Image (cartoon, rainbow, N blue to C red; front, side, top):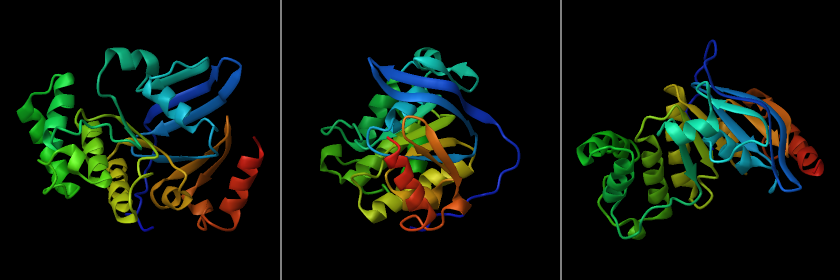
Length: 251
């Protein structure tokens, strides 16, 4: 997979700061001892085995789960408190677009934007440039249920961007997409990171993580290893696969 060239950035502007963060569900440990900073303009990949805590990590950042231990801060504020008081700081895109099938793409965006106080003209003004960038000219006014999964996922990305978030979180966003649709989505996400957004991508696709991320975390209940994109040029053989095997083997 080929992606836009990543820009070199100087300095740091922390958007996410996790300090000793952990999450348990009863007796089961999902995550423990997570220390992580994600800066503005940075795209961080998260790779690991099923059940390794990747999605839990995103939900802690999104403020949809409260950590059992440690703390998670987004833009300097407790992430859980932020999610209850300030709308739109964090955008989340998952493998399932979550659109209303009987509404058009535009109507879906009007609905979700309206939940956060945006008028229909305001939604259109924000959404239409994004729709052009994502080549949605023919699907924007079609019922969502009649659109391909790839087109629905593009609408989901536009929905996440309506409120100009500081942090974009992606949980397997291309799991149900064909390669061309996946490439278009990744390219747009990379562009957003280059424009200054902090982005975190959970994926099983090592090639995608290498192509679009500035660094990749191998996670299995904790951060086992952190790789920069220059350290893992061969995602299917060699060092990356070996580290992946060590991560899976360390359950």
